[in-house]
Image (cartoon, rainbow, N blue to C red; front, side):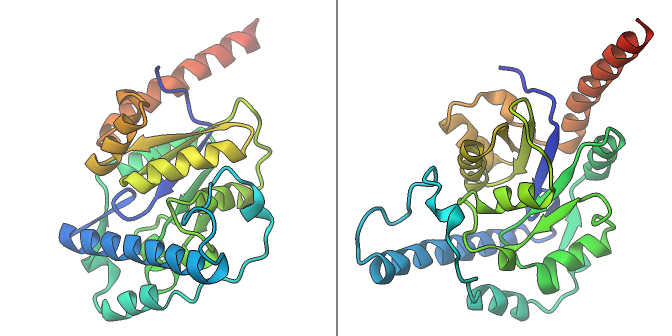
Length: 248
């Protein structure tokens, strides 16, 4: 099934909007993030739920949305970023073609957001400012803003909430990510909104998840140059239809 034109686009950060100059560092950070996530769920299952139910609750259960939760202390995440001493421009760089895609989407008034499992303070916000990316995004969501990190859908849903959009059934939210958990989070988030959240894989790990979920190869776009080439005719066709309608 061919991809539908997005009405909203949300980007993951590490490995998606920006790439690490040292890919091994990104891999290590992803492993640590996954380990933190799994460990927190095990401790919550043991001490809060007394070993009852699933270790990771069903994400389609809306109960988690309505609960007041304490924000996590994020000691490991903060320790990781304190250990990192280099300025962000020596660690990451914008992915090739990113600005072309952001410019095209902004030109057509597509609301943009960015979500990340990484910390904003001392890392994510520095990246956005250093590379002049903050002007493109209507809102950003980082690890300290949420209780549950991806693959939980909370970061995506919070971004949509903060954008203050009236999401309708025909809205199509593209969520771009490079990891398996990004695909899982997007599919889970789609169960909580009137429109649809469509995962777009921009790297091999996410591409494998797309195929595992039987989403089809159209959901795999391995470069922003290819994405630009796919998006441009989508908006040009719409512009042409609007012009015809206005002249009729």
